Image (cartoon, rainbow, N blue to C red):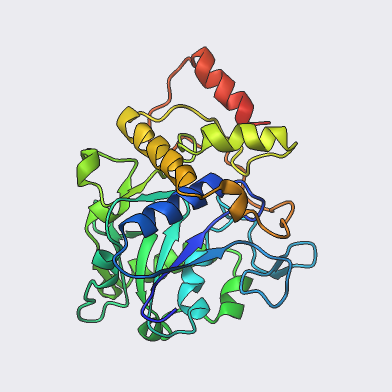
Length: 291
């Protein structure tokens, strides 16, 4: 698509993230002042796919250390874009509240090949929203084949860029607001409901998967999100997407991948403090997460 904002989104290959995908696309297009082109990145059994993975034969992506079914895909975005032009990486668990052109048109200064939010200590950055200059990134990223073969691809690439901070331009934290933090909802440009245990989509996805006899890829404890206003924000966009003709079923994978070999998240504690004792509601959600 000519002059489109190219967004590459990491998501699950077994239909666990359908509601997230729907809300992300709806919210991104709702505010966009120019065309948006979305590539859903999910594990595939097809050897011709950039996301090819065959764990039984040890081919393609090595996923066994991943916390999600797409953890290291972000480093393959410039290659998937043909090392041409710009490309924006996003996790699926995001709700857009701005015109994506604001981010897309951001100048990259000096030696920077990517824009991303810096961590508070300044020694690292959050790659879950990343604007890449794909041509300039070629000199710093492994080939797709080499990247897929790395058992610790995500960790190694994080360290590579941590050691070379001049390659990363700081991105305003409002474009990657982790679970809202201290921001008012109206100040958030892109909401990243990052905590895997409190994701707003669970209330829709878990009952759907249970009815289908399937399990969610997140096997940790599920509890309510601390920000009721952001929960309502997601629910509103979910309903508005449905009213606009979107449907979670439209995002189903034509050929589900099957079992993903990845790290368990049963001990995951996320971004929020854990109560010593759980309410009946929290126990109910935890049971739903386990199927």
